[in-house]
Image (tube, rainbow, N blue to C red; front, side, top):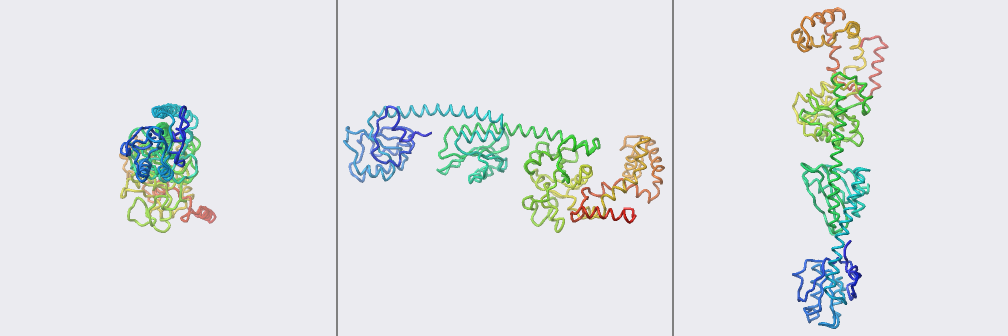
Length: 554
């Protein structure tokens, strides 16, 4: 609350009479000062109640008018006269000039020293009152932080600052506002935050009507967010203090939320890692933690991205609520993200390149169907936010996550770009996937490997894993035995059992091809192909049913 001229006239013990300039009684009185100079302006700094007995008042009407105009232009709060000392009354030309300038002119019936003391006492008391208001507001914000978190801090700040509050993300994105509706000053605050370049700072945008204070959040390093507060101009000192205190509370709140999110994703990531390593059935993942509905976009970012950085980027690129159902884990092949598939955003909103170009292969066209597929992928924005290359693959269900991670990681290992590449953007991979009916391919693998798995269930021994290791090693028994961690004689016994159980020797090209296809189809054919090339799952199911009806082997 400011000490206006009107309030000064009503202070205890004050006897004053308004002579002119009623329209300016809203002017704030910062200090009361006596001056008998003909031109006191060089000695003023604005907001003064200038008191005089008229010794320095010009004798000519034009001089008196100029005297009043100079005081008004210098920001003087009011001009007060003590009459019957050097002059009996205030000249009419001076009063007319004061009315024209809106400068209050008073007659003081109290001693000048009493006026000065009353003004000084009011400001001292107001400072104490302001400090008490700040303490009360700080306590209220602390209680609100415990009870309601970020929303409670902003609401309490806006109430005690008699204004509005806005929370922005580290890059100026809108997070929360009080009131909730969009306001014109929000854009100004976001521009000020973005102009800082991510560094910590504080500033005020004051146009003389409203003051917008923009304060960075965080205790070290880059800003973790921004707090903006709009109040009437000029900005009061206690609002600065409240904003600074609220910024500290919000920084602590955001830090706690970030640590909590990191812990949550670390626990969920451990479950995802168990699925990828084969230690946990994929179906159990959805039972042990909340997972988004299928299908999924599986993203593998180049190694070197920490879990904290991954979680922060994930929060920024996903919609509200999606981050809590996404999965993240850091692995040797890179940081793995399992995201809800999102193909509904336009390319410019999703961060895709103009013309439908894939993010990870600069200059390579991705027109037509492939160009449409890249639009809206969260992996594009995610890798751009992290500043690393990444690969992506679609998974139609949780059971396809391991295969999708292998294909996405293979794109990252292959290199050749600084952005994001998706399996669907690679024409040979897409054509190979479209050549298979997924259900028929799975039935083929199950039928070929069934005798081996049944033998394993009855007698033990990893016949399927041994066959795969042997064929991947190029028929080199020594290499395969080392990879499996078994003796070469154990390997030979398992291979002999596999030949006997599968019904043919590995030297038979046809039998060997059937075994190899059954073992490697999940790796040769990218997952996520439960829909047709045009995205219609019904057509693929119909093809599988037609093949069964005609008695053809898929």
